[in-house]
Structure formats: structure tokens, C-alpha cells
Length: 160
Image (cartoon, rainbow, N blue to C red; front, side, top):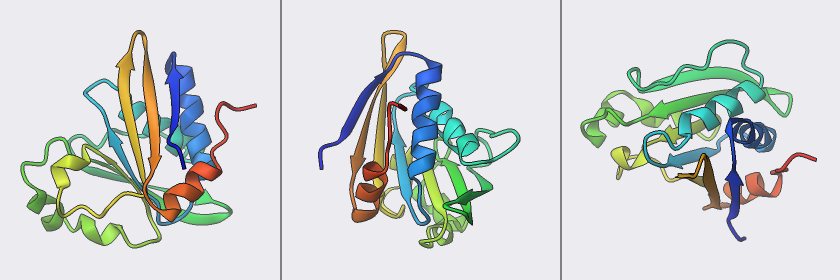
């Protein structure tokens, strides 16, 4: 399958893509987010988590490294766990924190700065590449597994 690409001209387009991804989620999905500081990784994740049904603040896990959110996906309760590994000094910190156990095939794990957790981080199903482009951003979604393909198959963006 070809990667999904789009230009997101503003914050509302980023939020719309986050909402579209929320509707395409399924338990066990592992998503890696790549992009420079300010590329929109947290904004996209925040929109996804809120569209998945979380009521309340979606905090950036910059200092806590992870934030869990309990939502419903396809009518069943599931945890979305948002990781920000930017401040990790070594991949061993990921293991020492016990995060690997969260990648259990039931939780949805979204990881910012996954390169900080290599090689101990479990592989992604979906890779999201974000880059600043003018006043907006460009995005590419790459399916790297059957689970990732299923997600992209159900992605409806732009919304009709």
C-alpha cells in the first residue's frame, strides 16, 4: 500500500487528521511520530486522543515520559498511552521504567521521538512523519504491518 500523504495548512487540518486517525484505531496499534520540534506531533496526538473520547486535558508527556488515557474504541474500553521520549538519556530508561510491558497487543501506544528508544522499543505498525511546510505541515503515514494497513484502510481524510 502506498503511504498516505497530505498537506495540513493549519491547526484545524491537523485536528481533523487526528480525529480521522481516532476513528481508524484498533487495540494493539503502535504508532511512531517523527518530526522536528514544533512539527505537530503533540498537536496531532492531542486531537486523536480527544476525538477518541477523552474528556479533559491531554498533557504533553515531555517530563513524565508517558501519559495514559482510557477511551472506547469500537465500543470497547482501551488505553491509549502517549509517550514522549525526547528527554530519555538512553534506551535502558525505557526498559527501567517498565514501558515495554505496555506494548501488550491491547493498548494503543503512540510514541514521540521513538529513535531515543531504539533498539529496545517494539516496532511500529504505523509511522507518522511530520514536517513544517510554510505556515502548515506536511504529513506522511506509512503502514509497516497488517495492523498498520488496517488502520490506513479505515482512514477517512479529508472528512466528507
